[in-house]
Length: 394
Ligand SMILES: *Cc1c(COP(=O)(O)O)cnc(C)c1O
Image (cartoon, rainbow, N blue to C red; front, side, top):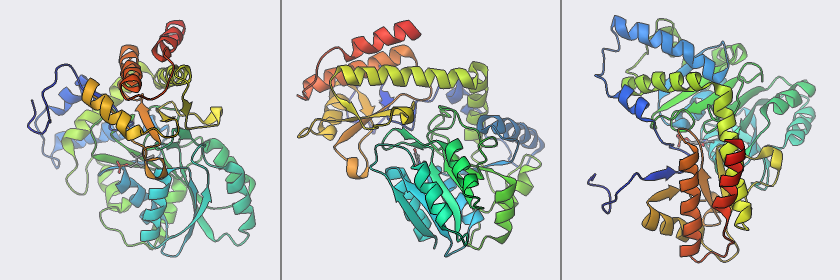
């Protein structure tokens, strides 16, 4: 037993938070390989093919850069490489992660303008279009949207956001956080006309935390030439120059890159469309369980349900944190907590990454037993409803 575990347990821990997700054994084994000389010829060959196949996951033919960092680093890189202090940025507050991104933008000297939601839906596309139409002088330099809002379980319609920007005839850049969406739900950097896509390793890519990504359009590359936010570590230019030969300007997270190589192979062998369909199926089964329990999901717009995670609302007067603590204590399963204003109001079930039907049934079984043990009013039969659905659609 690891020294930091509070008590001995048998059986696998269920890590059902919406990131970090479970890392497949094949990826763990790929990382269990000696670290190599990151300036040597073998690394150049490895790096070059890896950066090339990484583009497939983003559905882009344009560069994708990798920084050793959590997703937050890629947020900062996206803003610092394309914008200047004082620039206005239009941001959609879909939930806690959008809120954090907006705070970061403020600290970089940008002027975020917020389109708020009630945290029960994705970005308000009509409001984006209206704000851009009003901005006749084109003072807004970027539109920032979180594709999969991990605090609520809402997805935003990125293709529709692109259309809205075009319909308004506005030149703003489109920056999209798909940290928790990539490789779990459909994402198309090129086709959707995204200028910078922001991603991380520890969610749909099934890796441990530690890698962050920017996919970069030609328009964003051009913006980088004139961007005035001071940047050094996050600067795309030395990164792109080194990447051309498969190298990195400073030491890369070599063993995480071995893992990334294996994870992309797994995703491509399964087929991205099959990966997305699997996430859709598990999400629908989860929502059926929630409804059978008589509980409510956080997101109110069915077309914007996330297939990555489901946030479940607790009945008034009941504590989501107490429920999570009971489930951890009794059943050795971690569920996501409510973030920001949703703290203690919701718990979040992650059904992303390396995940199968029996793990889902086990997860939902843990929740159903936990609801009983914690005295949360509910009806039985959630797991049954999920199994019936999976049996018809497995
Ligand atoms: C996880 C997550 C982040 C933050 O990433 P870190 O790796 O914790 O820095 C940002 N945005 C979204 C949507 C996320 O799910």
